[in-house]
Amino acid sequence: MDYPGNLFVVAAPSGAGKSSLVKALLQIDSHLDVSISHTTREPRGQEQEGREYHFIDHDTFKAKIAAGDFFEWAEVHGHLYGTSRVAIEERIAGGQDVVLEIDWQGALQIKKIFPNAMLVFVLPPSWEELAQRLNRRGEDRPEVIAKRLSNARVEVAQARHFDFVIINALFESAVFDLKTVVHSQRLKYAAQLRSKPAVFRALDLG
Ligand code: 5GP
Image (cartoon, rainbow, N blue to C red; front, side, top):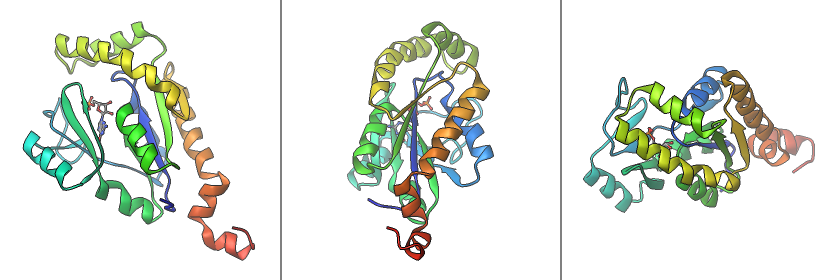
């Protein structure tokens, strides 16, 4: 599918700082929109319906799968998460760039549907630092943190399938790295051709 907008997919084990990185990127990049996923998990802390997620129950989620409403969906940490078609298709068709914050399974599904999608994996600098960050966050119960840490081993092993890897040791450097990935993707010949066909036509290119 050759849409004028670019699709970026950012994955990471929880605690690696993915959400903060994407939030920082959105603040400095007005051409980028984030896609709000659907999930069956309960809201955490200050989370609000329609801001971090659309929170729906299991039956509604299953009905959406059956209706073909999701581009991809996956079970992560015992809950269902999915990216709805409407969340991205209209926007990239209209030339808007979209970033998805999803898990590795969803990222690999998206790459099959959109081969132009850029997959970015965010790694923590070490296992110790990841554990400290999850504990510091204070949002989850100890058994939930333990589960997330053991899942992180499986998740991190998937980084090899991604186009880019960002090691989030120093937050500001990682934001810069993410911004660089997004910017360089936009400058690729094929991406420029997709987003500015009139310029290419005028120059007898394309
Ligand atoms: P959390 O519950 O911590 O918000 O998210 C748990 C994991 O699910 C994270 O890795 C997050 O990126 C992932 N996730 C969030 N939305 C989606 C989605 O729409 N699809 C998939 N495959 N994973 C998602």
